[in-house]
Length: 363
Image (cartoon, rainbow, N blue to C red):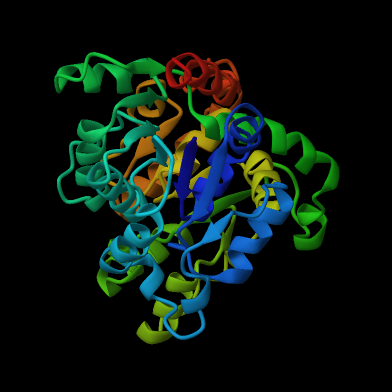
């Protein structure tokens, strides 16, 4: 028996192709930790991606009274402990670098279960990022490791992890390719927002260090105001709250909209001139959709995108962001990225993981 534990919206996306394969080939239990606590925002992802409802939602009874608690590591530990105490699975699947990932790994080890880590080996080498410590700890406690790229596998090898690691690509590519085709047919977001292909940019900003600091947030707004195209921002609840608290006015070239489902997000991203983000997953989705990316961070754990010339690290320097935006537009960077082979695979990562698990788990 295998149990999968995830807890965030990006993880729903990244596991959307794998969960049905696990259901088909194994006795499989699916647990959602509720780390992302907004019921409306989570439900739209389950619905659009047609991911089956979890067998267990750990924080469902607490959302109304303690909406922030479900994302807290100290809250996740006891709730996951209570769930895994009677769990009969030999293997626990975790994904990426979230609080749910670390809590599930620690509790799985406590109860003598083997840990399968998907998206293993990512490294930013930036100790300021809480996610970096999670990646390292989980990788070194895992029994089977699925790396998204050769570089990630090399990082694992460098740390002495040489066995039971497999390069399979990233499951986000599976989802991105599948659902971008559906988005092309079904999403009406361009018409709704009155946007033309390549005539706007898409920005996503949510990291606490960027939106919780008035000094950093004002720099980002200043940088976005210098971009010649319209900037569309599906505004994260944290970002929206801080704008109000700090009393900041949104520049006139920015169109702020409510958070979107996955299909509309893919349609917006695919048809944008380029994207600006402080997210990790969007860097992968951008190169998959052949769209240039400007990352508003000093470091990244998606180094492949930088080395291939599809992603540009700018931090929050307004001058550098303005320069990179103009360079992308003036050099037709989008057409050059179309020729790049995706370092995160061809969209078959979920099938590769399933085949390896069939061999490893059943023997």
